[in-house]
Image 1 (cartoon, rainbow, N blue to C red):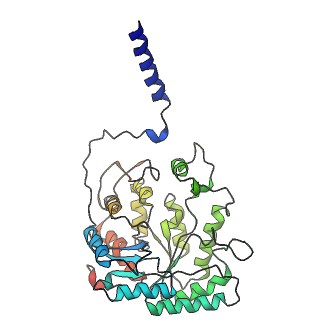
Image 2: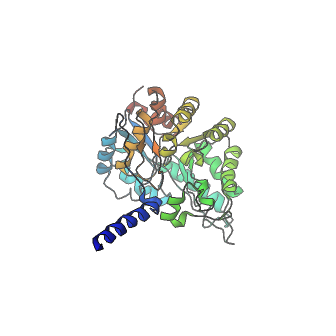
Image 3: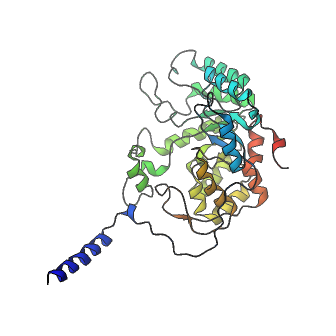
Length: 360
């Protein structure tokens, strides 16, 4: 009788566990048997327009180039140039290297002293100095519009008029502005069973925002679009597809409206991979407006991008479940679209890239 009760309790315990399993714990391997074509490197040499290398002034560039070679990455764009003397140090390290043609640096601006009367004129001078030093673009971080505040503690809007001349100077110099504004819209929504980013918000609680923290999502995104409209002679690259990778119809409308707006695919490949037919239609129509970007520089993660873009594989996972608990499908993009995504569009937008390093 004792053994019977123990067996019964064991079965009941297992049943209760199965019924109460946490969402995070439920991750069964697929039983689907389909062709698999993982990609270790890109089909064509590519340019990563969204990468961060904070210590490029001191780093071993040979090691970086070796990793790039393994992926077929021909040029990397370091968005963390910082500007001024720090950029000078970066360019000294790059210029003395035999790998100089394969590294492009962008500069950045600081907003701490935006209330100073000469902030605008001095920042414009900095952009000119950084361009002469070697910077070939400006990166605006998401802190602008989110966490940067002025001397009164007020949020510095993305479209603050004091920054306008800086964007104008970029257009005059012929360099693009790559801008990251806000985060996925779900971060501003209630953290409940209807929030698709629930798992990410649970594992990364600092990403959760209230509806007005620091402003509504729609407000921050509209401020970004305001500067695109206000500076038509400056090319802007919206990071992370402008946070509309899950609404390609709306993103298409924005691209139609603003011919100086481009996008890159950093950190949103999982969104494209779950809508292969819609994504293919988008790439077909806007093939001249999308660039390859990755954001976090982790060589082991690039192959997932290649597989989504190049293969016709079905139902395979993303590498971060808290970003995407769903499975993805390959887009099998045509070669000409791949070439534009991988390098042609970047060569068109970013000065200083040697086109001879790439196929016709």
